[in-house]
Length: 411
Image 1 (cartoon, rainbow, N blue to C red):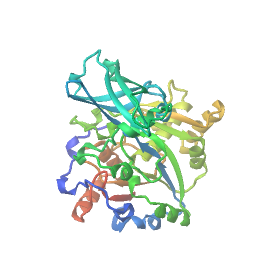
Image 2 (image 1 turned 90 degrees about the vertical axis):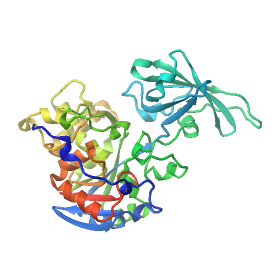
Image 3 (image 1 turned 120 degrees about the vertical axis):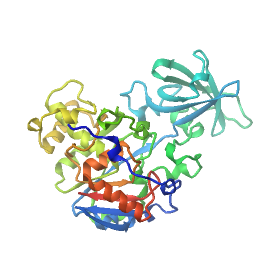
Image 4 (image 1 turned 45 degrees about the vertical axis):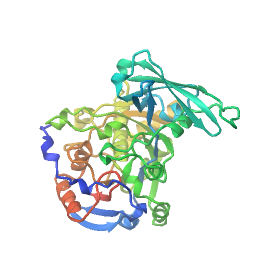
């Protein structure tokens, strides 16, 4: 695979074009439609009319957790613990959210040097009508792993007997929604709602699948009226999605890994569907494409088939690859053989120019940061036309990034 220079995936994004806040109505955003080289400008509410007939629209139903916890030391210094994933890493995030009494997580740690090796951080959290004392200990400092423990704290006037609180309950009272760093502002109360999709269901993401932020119950109803089929899978978006590429040759970038869950229903829908498959967001697209490669690994009887690294898709000879149905069927056969209703994978798939898309035919997505892995994915999907698309968006007043406008890409 030829060298890919980071400079070739940069563009000038004026600061004023970054949407700091969402629009009052989600579906009033703009929609740039790119269809086989032709560009049209529409409103997002027009999406149901613009999708190819017989499409299957695949959403990511992950829900953003309030992943930022702040503890104050006795000296006054604040330590931020940003939850990344439960320990062990292959544990279901939704399962860890239901932990009681203790939970272990890998974290990004702000002001790390101030946190002594044997120091226990504490804070009291008010939940309903009682308090809970939450403690944070180092579990494995070398791996940035933190153990959280919680017990009933001091009684407050009117307290009843404290309940057996889950880790999710702790986070919802003490944690903050982790807005993308490029928004460069504090979290507001409104972000708790606006930085979630209306169909979010499974808690575990530390960033929203932002292509889905434009959908409203009305748009979803219109999709059903138009006969557009929908399905929901789960990829818990990690903080690595904001990790900048720092290598001049983008192939050398270390891609982050994320947990993805496929249900038996997902697989059956993909096997029986004969029309176009449209991913809502880059996370849905990465999930769909990863599914193909998990199937390949199963067919090849490779060890640890549920871990997909960033180089795998480029390492297998095209002559040795199955058609889409065979790969998807391999995953479904695995579920049937093991009696499971869903399977968990860990994907580090890295879609860049040269990648051939195996399952996805179209993409609904926002406008992304210059020089990011998401721009590389767009360039892989639409080729050099990504520059024309972004130039058109900039010239026509589109708002960029997480709270910005949307596009429908049909190469």
